[in-house]
Image 1 (cartoon, one colour):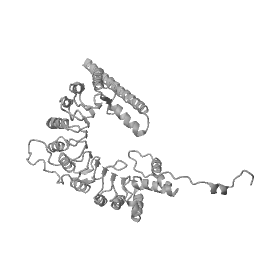
Image 2 (cartoon, one colour; image 1 turned 120 degrees about the vertical axis):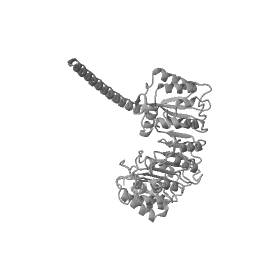
Image 3 (cartoon, one colour; image 1 turned 90 degrees about the vertical axis):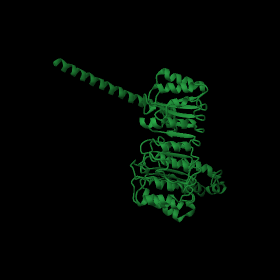
Length: 470
């Protein structure tokens, strides 16, 4: 060996072992190996490979792999069976499972049954469940039964549409649902998409007037144990429950603070009763509905007065079709409101009323910090664009908000910020794409209008010609 050269053996002998990275850093690094989209329920295939590198990596990779389990690819049946066998043979792994997210593509026979078995095995440690589609019949019954054993469940998210957006059977009946949730005393959040529960509505709709009985508040309601869900904070329901059922939720969860509804559920006698029960604890309310004129005339004013008097309501999202802007004229209205997401549905007069309410002294909604405004007067993709209002109307509202220190955002801008954050790009890039798309839409509309005008001119010319002939 020449002078100055070092043998490989001596290098290996003198090499110091590199210090192992802390587990916390490994967990952070490994979690970046898969960028998960909103509807992506596929497992992270990189983690099993990382687990085979060395012992120090094994613990971190295994923790990420089993703490949040994802079963949402086109081979769910085999994956669920393998996971079931693994968990059956290894009790320590069962205790690691905190969250299960499941989505079916092809409704393979046995996959929902395997999911039920996995939930039963991991029930003591489970904190979160999310389903996007499922098989019906005996398999669904087994799934519901297994879920009742997850006594520490905190979060539940169910969609009746599978990964291909095909509608499945109803997950449970209304009585089954109320029986299940009373098994979860630590439940904190529920999000149900459209048609998860059935039947859709009560047969006896609770409007005032003809055929109404004295026991309307309890007729058709579900018996529940008051206060059974003391930490239940957030309920997002899309077209599943009626006002009577929401009243039962209010009795179960006296501390419910966040509510999102997508129907006329509050515009009924029992809906009003539910809102009265919930208003002291509500901090965030989202209402998306378009009540009929008769329904709004009957219940709109009472809903508005209850919301205006809610002492802790800090965030409100709704449209003028549900609550007129005149509700803000009361000097005592909305004492804690900080964020208002408001859609103007009818005309610019409503914007005048809202502007006058915000201009009034003493300040209405004194805690207001942000106003997100959406309009149906001239909209792009449902969102207001700059110049949507008459210049004077828009300018007056901007000046009033500026004088009060209220941040005014049109919902178009708010949507851009959400898109930019989700796609991890700049706001300017998203804005450019939106504006290009808007130009295409409006140019297409103008072309259609021109064609319609040409057709009308041709029709008028033909009519005039026929009159001359006569």
